[in-house]
Image 1: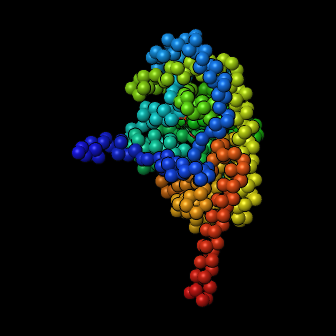
Image 2: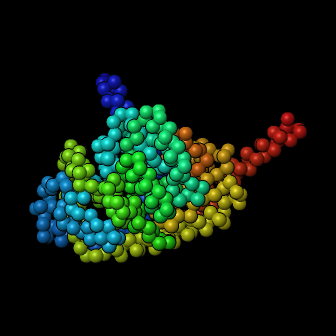
Image 3: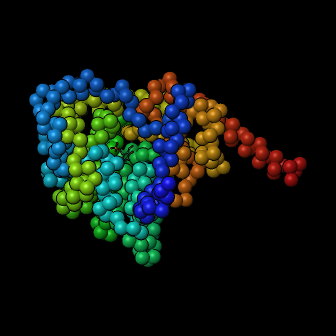
Length: 425
Ligand SMILES: Cc1ncc(COP(=O)(O)O)c(C=O)c1O
């Protein structure tokens, strides 16, 4: 029997399993109400319109849709993406675009192109686990920066301080990874001021920013803010922002198509990296998406998706207010977009341990907060997904979650009282 461990590369040995993907296997049982996955609501998929678009591709261009395509991506789809971006005030040229097999490939590609073993990436505490995985798989590290108490972006003072310390240690920092619009996991949205401050920091320190924006168009409350990519375009236009976009949350994750917007020199290097990865993105999917986008119906789908998620987010927030223990140390974010919110619990509750009881005793699941940290994880938080379940299920699930959390708090506090009372000493 081959000893595989001895033949794996050092990069492969640095790869870590996604805790979420492992957890999802556990929570797939039908009796469990799961707020763990990051799934879009299937009722938002425009099935009939997508079927018609696919039929038209078979009628009009079956042979080219079934053939290899260029690595850069289908020109028809690029045209539609440019129109889509133009409507949001972003002006990419075709050479600023690369069609990819969704954002996860882009995260891997960016890490592959930019990171040598031992390099550092600045990222939030917490941040998207798939980005951490991509960075680790090139034997690089994350320099974690906490958010402000107002949760409107990085704590810039800590960023300056940690950056200076890392430089003094001789660490090589290659880029900053951020998700300014309704971040996964906590649903945070960066303020305009913090977006500008980060861009200014990157200009001063000569760093690239990788702006991951899968949820950008899923804003169901408040006003749109310019992306950091856009702020650079409107300002000094130094081309230091690499913006990752995807159809996964605005239309369907199953199509596995996204795009990178960046300086043409960066895109040219990505094209070479992608040739070794998969030659080209699924050609049929690209032509199919272009055909669907030509109908103009994507805007309507996005609007319906936002309406759907607003209702579910409101329901989840309302149920948390109704059922959770009312204490200063039990809090949750109230996102204005995206798919997730983040619950923080008293310091003595370890959600890594609580998940077993939650699944076994109350048949409810969440993602442990610790999954979203590269190092020194916080253990008293959890991520909840509100896009997938219907409002009645959200209510039942939050009731169950609140029950188990209330029990944990009561158990701890009665034990603590016993220990500190005279009889207990
Ligand atoms: C922040 C973030 N980036 C990237 C991805 C990957 O998305 P996809 O590969 O489906 O485009 C996700 C998926 O949930 C995400 O939350």
